Length: 196
Image (cartoon, rainbow, N blue to C red):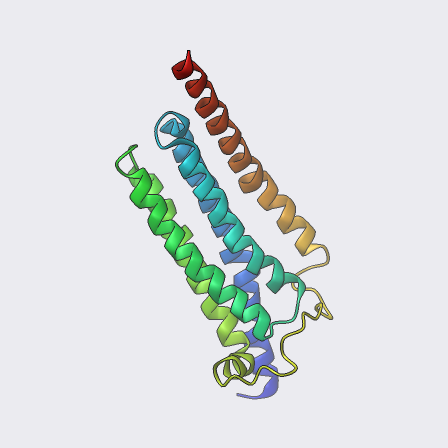
């Protein structure tokens, strides 16, 4: 395999991340939100579960933003690994908390399968694409590989980051903000009723 083939394969893998895995992760998040809404999450598992959903979104959004805006180095890899591990723990807590309090449909479980596996697949591809930096991470050769450096050339088409951010705002940020607000309103209204 010559250098042109390697560049072609690397670009193909980057395109899989940008145009397949990242959008599917957002779509799965939206479908999960639809399932929460259908089960009236505010009336059962409520604000606690809704807050866990927002936390998990933030846990994955931070490494996605870093990978889209900065060159992959030891710092970015450490953030990605820590965020993935934290996401796994919170996802377990989320299902443990929600399952006795509300019905989790087969559709929601299917959405969860994507939401749980896609971050791992994305992390794995980031490792493959940046193998020399992974070796630096593992061998503790961190000197000169810790400072965040903006990408010289953005991934994807011109304006990809803006368009992806807009896409995620529409299908994930706004719906989950609505869920948090709906759950908070129900929580505080029910506390006012109880205190009367």
